Length: 429
Ligand code: SAJ
Image (tube, rainbow, N blue to C red):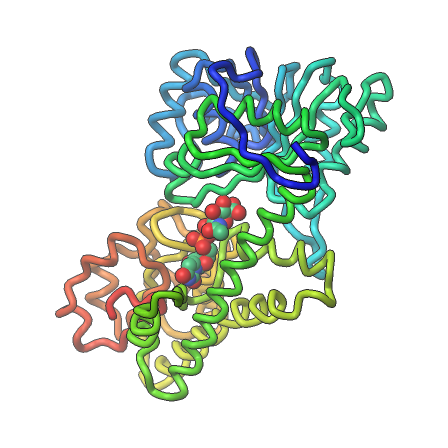
């Protein structure tokens, strides 16, 4: 393989890794990876810093909402192939799936990656494989090499210019879509970026145990940037759709009809406007590129500004509608950052409901089928109550659809007839 280029990995009968695999970080990425590896017969040790998560998994249950993951984890734990622990243990391969958020000023925060790297450094032995799955700024995998090298001068670190090394280190960015994680984990192509070609080969050898998609080998930096670019591309496309929704509001055009028509062109594919862009990926990752090349990224920055500004626009629309009523009751449908999951990270829906509560914009009846209780930021507010869908629709003057959960698709349109409806997702268009 030319190491500045890319190469398709030819699958082998035998995956180059045997024995024990340790996955650090048991969240939306790490836990499904544990389950997939355990289902392939590996002995998997999942490590997390949160005792509640470790206990939950060890009883065969899961702490997140993700279709079918509960069954897979239950089977893996029952078969003895998966166990969770607070303290890392020696293994033959280590997969880091820890958060990579940003700090104030949108600078990447690599502290979790550093902490995980320093946790495993003393446990490494010759022949081990270290894989970074967390979405990371360009240069992070090289940084991992440097961190391990500083702690373990006895180990020969991999180097692109050298064949020999005591351990292999690669970046294999996760690309799974929350809500479809198990299918995408198996079916999606993978990009595997090695510090050296041998590192990429080793890592691909592990993933071939459960990945049906193609594996594309490259260097670590290209793999890091490719992952960021995928999410930045989506952010820019959603930003365009959100900008169109503001244009349409001004010109009195239905944005959903407009986009559907424009998308009939064979080379146009505009995404959907919404209440803003949430989640831990698309709202975060473009900043890792912008921070690295600030003057080269005006389009990515503009998309971030448009998408971050959308929740405030929705808030103002609801406020204006509420001000026309005496004691408005507002049904707020959905809190998570997108449909059919329980994830509240960077959720525009949550942000909008918090804003309405803080401004005292009427009585808020919040319907979120994926949460048993309201998040802390809302639970203490006198004007906010959790409600069932039917009750909320019956009592509401304003129906604010924030998330296109499947439960909301089936709503009887008759119930909406005499209400002010603000549908931020175009679900009822
Ligand atoms: N959204 C819109 N309009 C759209 C599509 C999405 O407003 O047309 C909003 C969603 O409601 C949500 C946000 O954007 O608030 C992000 O949702 P998403 O479904 O686009 O993406 P994520 O964040 O759930 O997952 C993304 C995926 N990346 C791409 O599709 C390029 C996934 O494949 C990645 O693995 C994931 O980021 C990640 O972990 O990086």
